[in-house]
Length: 391
Image (cartoon, rainbow, N blue to C red; front, side, top):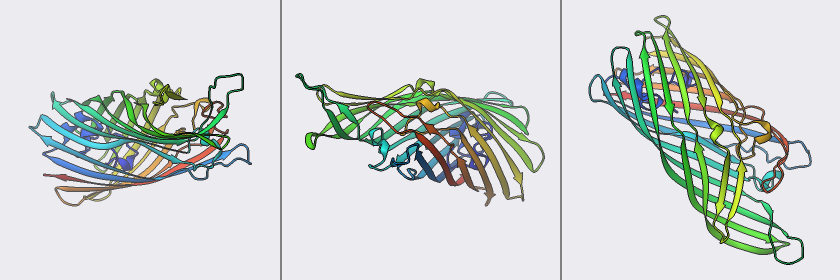
């Protein structure tokens, strides 16, 4: 869970650890491990450095197109009994923001873009026996998207003359709510070893909003209007298997193996209602991708636990399909953290992260959303803080 106590292990073990209120989102089944009623708050501040270098040195590469993001989170677990727990969480499981500026060579494809999903999730868990717990919940996803681009396109005109090329500016702002579900299970071999699995369903959202469109031909304004716009967005399904293993009184090892099913994310279509309608398809052709993570805990003192972790996320897109609005590649995360037990009720967690976001290459894209060929050098640094209170 973003801003939770397992940030310091690069998220490793999140479907099995069951520590604090954040377990209501990480894997509802692990709420069986939570004592009493607990509430948690967290926040991550992340700064991304996205540097694109066009193959053609005469082209404007857009400089650093990264941004600074604040990602808050909230979670709560309520114990109806020792065996039945209710939970509720609110967080942002996905967020992306990029800004190249209006003068960069790929403005035909995108000048700026941001997508953010905020998820609310009520959950329940039930302990079946001493070894098995089950849990599930409903995902309520609110997705917001903003995108600006300056495409050039051919306008169909009657008569024998060639159809003219029109330069346009399009700024869209759309949002939508859709629903999915989460299911999880936890198997406790004993107090030192447990394995959890969590599955999150795909959530396909039809975003609706407004677009401001201007179009010019040879300095003559052809259009300056607003239109209803639609944009489809996929939050893909995923499955994660995690383990937690207490090796000694002071040390524990945590791990993740998971897969996100990006392959259903084939095309994003921007539709603007301009009488006959304007459709701008963005071909994605993403593929399923795996995640691997390993982390560790070391009990430094009675009140302080040190953490470290590493995770590797495979790229969901090949070079020939990579687009300038989402230039994703393999991601390697390196994290350090500490958990401080301030008193019997209050736990504080801190973490820092360096993320190597890869050296993605983008190929020349022709057509309506043309973009230049070149290479990215992307990275990010992040800091996390969370508090968990038991009452």
